[in-house]
Length: 410
Image (cartoon, rainbow, N blue to C red; front, side, top):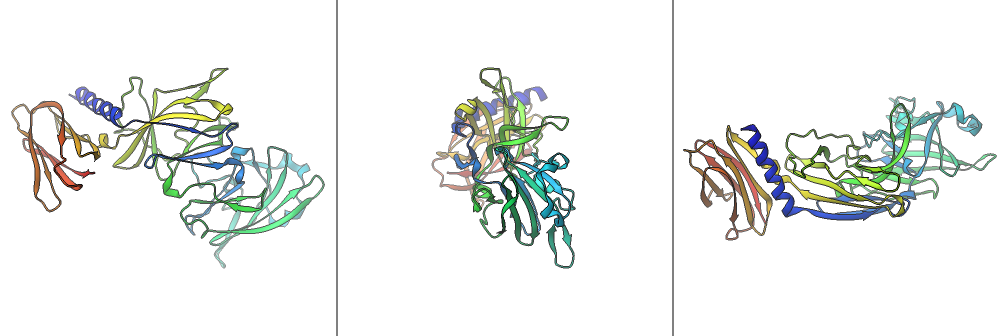
């Protein structure tokens, strides 16, 4: 029976895929000049110039501190000194003795500056003032060989930092700035360009994106850090991956991970002349226990165009395929409905002598629809166009067993 139930789930997934699949082509631009954020719910891609920012400051809570570097454009961070008093003595001739630091590519908030040797990465907590005060002097080395020294001097509802640029003989243009947490209240991070001496917006509102196509640094093993192009997902979702050679799949029972690089970069590989995409690998992006999308990549053109193609589908309805009792399973899709057409999928194969029934109730308790079901494995479309749009309760009953689910009619 277990093997048969698995077949039923895969069949349901196949139905949903046929009805709801969406094809998307987006572009990071030639040379990956853009970071592209994507939302499945709104089917919206939002692009930002990848070179527009250097440092990002976590701003979603006064109790949370996080500072990231834009490693994707080739900025490398070093801890050059562990005392703020060394600010005036930093010498790029000492680069070999500096400690390289990297963003954590599994957690948005554990940026390169949080890897420093201070208790808070870049500073220490002052119990008298309740501020975190900067103690670590960092040097940022850019891809073009430019150096900037940087210290986050203070945190208290915002970040006060100081930086200067090496002109070949001396540090010049020393500047102190504050980026307040109150800036861009809908975003997770505030961004700053040290190159242009200005705050910038470089991401959508926190709830308006699910994944970002970007360049980032990852550890390929043995401490070998390398700049890769791939996908990092929002902290608001979890992701599972599942190899599906036959094209079918089931979002239930997978290992959903918080690590933001779960999709990562290895859904593609370079064969020496072009990129090949692993279209047998499916990624399931889950918002909560009732909303999940299935993503499969189709094409990646590399740095020549930065074009990426993928298909996705809302498979939230398959999450509702549940076992009512031994030998009795039930699911329905799509939910919310499309044009008030609802497909019921159920397996009552062992309940040969038991009657099965579908009943739909309005929120006031009134029964507004009822239909008897035959035994065995069946899928049946219900025309609910006679009902008003809104929230209903669906009850599937087989013998003495029943299960109840919410239904939204659009």
